[in-house]
Image (cartoon, rainbow, N blue to C red; front, side, top):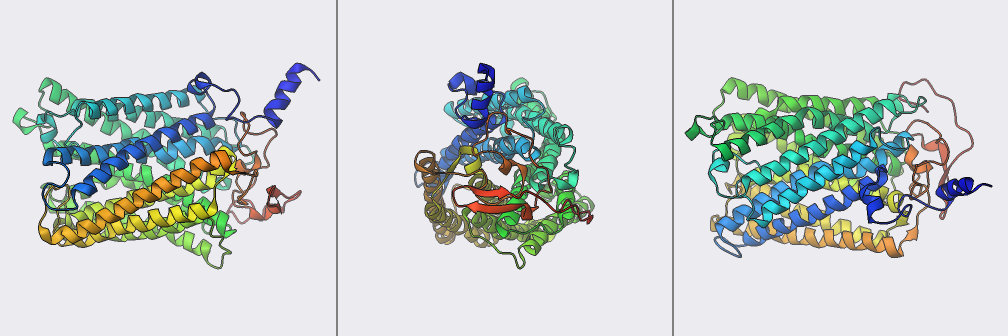
Length: 562
């Protein structure tokens, strides 16, 4: 055997993407989508930690009316930086850029994404935007709220220009990732894999990429115009300079409401993977769920005006936006009912990822139902700018996107790092985070509908009990998240070695080693319908699930292979 043959043999049999090659520069300039996904994962988790620290400061301040640990100006900066960091640095890139980068080519049986260099560039653009955001924090932060509403944002002396330019730069990272994923799904999908053989996570990622490409330029240009107006005193949004502040809201929410689906659509895709895997059952209504992802992406661009019922827009326009907002609930409901139909008479295994799937269903149900109150003008006018909005937003975005992210992280962790985490510790972490989250935000529906305004530094004493309950829940959630981080890190050192397919999942990423080799597959993977569980059998606890030697032919049902 030649030395070249030996080198290839080592790649396939002895080494994986984590340790071949080694060294900082090999990671910094890597074109391997898996390493880029890991770097994204580390970056977004650091952002989550930083944003969470600001959240703890906000909840600590709101334990009592008036000053508790900081003054009003410091409070404004804390809740602004919490929102901006969580949304732009964590929620938007967490699933698509981190988990998506790692698993999307594997799910297609491909060696990498279509444009590996663009993929690496997207990560370093993200890092550049993050560093500029951290610079803004170092020079005093921003006190405008994460929406940067004019005219206040054009008159405040805080670091508005640097923060908005950080978001502007981050937008390029999002666009590059979206382009890469769409081309990868179109061009690198195996010939044997039709659109309706793909895992539903790929459908949700595809729909997310559409939003990234079409929506992100709008908010980028809006923030650039804001920085130009503030720096050069050109009247665009500031009425004192002849501008229109409501125009800023239209531009901002035209992107920022679809951005909600940038965060929630990938989590919905993860739910389809978890529910089928741990229910050991084919997905019910595959095509309906697939097309509902695209429908959400399209309709999401038509409903931004429900954020502006109190901005002075006409009743007719408000009625149209109210109708369209109610319509977008239909594709979301299609997903939820099909997931529940999949679980009907399923043999559910309550592994940790499945606990997060059930958490997602509960939290998304509450967030979705309370959204109907906000879609209706008559109730939204009363609830607008109250803590009811805060609770609804967090049930959808944090409850949905974050718990979806945690479910996907626990699901793919053995594939990413080749190690199993402690299941008992994971149960404790889930219980702490889930119970703490509900304790934090459910009470906010009550104090909000009774008149507690959002974003306020001070409040009436009658709301103190509700705020204290909410703060206790936030601290409990923080303990849960630290506990999760502890056992996941511990698993990297002491965890049991993971088999190639420990869960018995049926998509292509489970046909390669855990963790995968640098070029993903040592041989062509066996392409099949993504939820063809009959083709897998449990060989042993150590070896996990393996493919059977044969498979039944296509049944011609049109619901993918089977």
